[in-house]
Length: 308
Image (cartoon, rainbow, N blue to C red):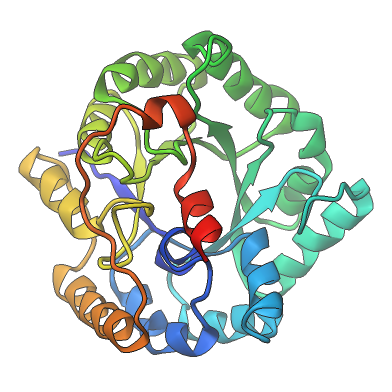
């Protein structure tokens, strides 16, 4: 029985995509220790937008948030994003600032990174990744999934090898921010990547925008994906990553081993449901397939922030 790892994104991508990153530190702290007990392999807590929104909309210190979370999350490694040469916002910064950004994230409790450049220009990530690994951080290279004549299986294989051979990463991840990876494409893309990267771990992160991720997840693990990104309902599905409860049920029914604790996850879900009711924030729900999304490919986080 093969074990599949689970990365939790409730405090990062889920609230970013459903609540436009308006989840305050006070909302997070009551469940931080419970998340640590839930059996997740990694708990993702920050990207650039979490810093921006914390200051701009919530009047909070995002560095203090990391420290408070680290006090409560002591088992699972906390993960953050390294975004090209932007750090925060959309202005390019020099390598020494990107390196400093990574250093301060590590100093404040981050142990893992997912590093990405939207155009797969890996020169923009080189310095920050190498410095992070020098300091002992585990770095995953992000492959941005999209539909175009350019985004072939061969392109992703080439970029995966570049991440491994030229930059140096510990793992790779397919990022399907628009939730448009079909099971049929997963059946060609994942085997191609696994053949090219060997024993390097491969993850998949999708979104529930048009109801594809559960089938794509099962097809992907059948072809060798090692870990999946999920979140806890009601901060799951719709714009957000898929529900961990549904994902785990499907995996176990298909013969895979998963370490998450269903009772702990259910308790966190109850808290989040009450929080959504009390604050009037939206709840994610499973969605039907809608072909137009394959054309516009707008990611879940963009939807929520355009409405906020």
